[in-house]
Length: 304
Ligand SMILES: [Fe+2]
Ligand SMILES: [Fe+2]
Image (cartoon, rainbow, N blue to C red):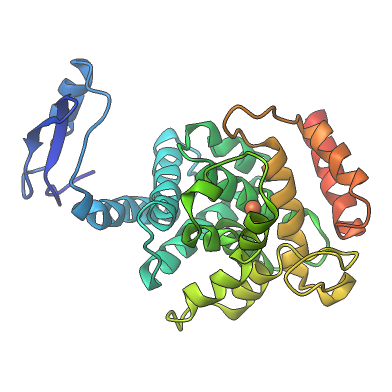
């Protein structure tokens, strides 16, 4: 980072005590950061009201990195992870979702698409999911990445579809942010009433983007249909087979695989092989051709 500090930066001294180490307008001095790091300071803090400024600074960094051809550096990785996480954090924790969130997610997806185009394997290795703090962050990023990998491996896929599945994968569960945390933060058995409520998350997404005219319609369709099943037994509309939007069929597979393989609370995790076995037994739920492509993709990964 170069230039002036866009906000005040603090270190935490104790539970509720913070001290300012940089103030807005200070010249950014990498050396000083290093000194704090050597003193054992692991985390820096900013005011919640400065979150957007912080995100904007991170985004500028990502955009600079995007222009470079070789972006597989630790710095790029940290910046992209941070940008994805902060955006998802805003949606799920601060309940902020607006034009700015959409535009920024598009930037992130562009980075992911670049990566998936340059080296399919690097994308999965690039993103450090374990670092993400909340389940919905991990699950959303994983779904987006798996959807991109699957879309790339499937025949006849173009840049437009990649952009739809990337953005759709990242935001597919955003409707959950409007449901009570007692339901969305828990992995216990749900009551029938709670299930009915959870099933509304696909439709809630429609309300959330209604005030955002720039939101791509294709992405919304993919989000609305991510729980439709190939056999017609999904929700919300019980669509069947090819009547389901192609990107939604891709996201459905990525979503299921991500849910089975992503850490959540104390729940046991499935290995990639076991997750696929589970999905194969859920007969008729997924587009069979896409599921085969996905299985092949994982075999390749294992062999590599
Ligand atoms: Fe969902
Ligand atoms: Fe999901």
